[in-house]
Length: 252
Image 1 (tube, rainbow, N blue to C red):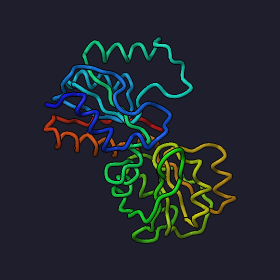
Image 2: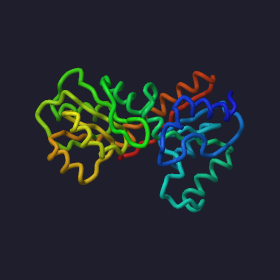
Image 3: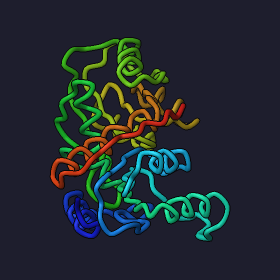
Image 4: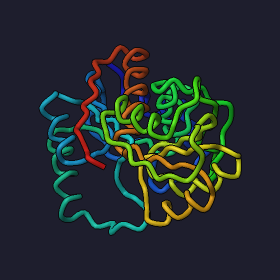
């Protein structure tokens, strides 16, 4: 068991949240009971995940996609009211870490995705308003575009969409989980053969062809399951907590 304030202070420091200018607040978003014995983790703080956390007896819910995004209606009405009401009714804290969790060099989404696929990072790129998020490196063995798409689909359990734009062999690759398709041009500038992210938009198809680089959209949810799992396991081990990761399938 650990005090919620101690858990949050440690995690904020571990992920260096002050180094990032994010689209949402990182750290404690909703305060619940003062002590945490059972921690539930998941990707997005949806009603379905909150309900699952309640059923699992959570004291705190740890997610990658929390609430209070810039540009959203700040009123507590509709869906937001229902989600918040469920947490408050069951005295469950909500902790959310977005860009700091993408970037962490040991527990982050990007490094964990690379490890899962057997890719070793040689460097970073994709600077926003904070540390670089995207990684690049060389594949252990060269793949065809079809081979890489099949590998992504098999490992992540989600169909990977391939937008062709390069040659028949992929050796140098870049990746960034979630919605990072806007860094395709930066990946091409590094001379990479392919770039992998979670989402795709209409201009991405044209850019891939014109830049001469393959693009793979492997699923936003599918690529971002691994950092929050790793963080939950780490916190459970450090503070002797019960921990469970709940994966609710999302088709995008």
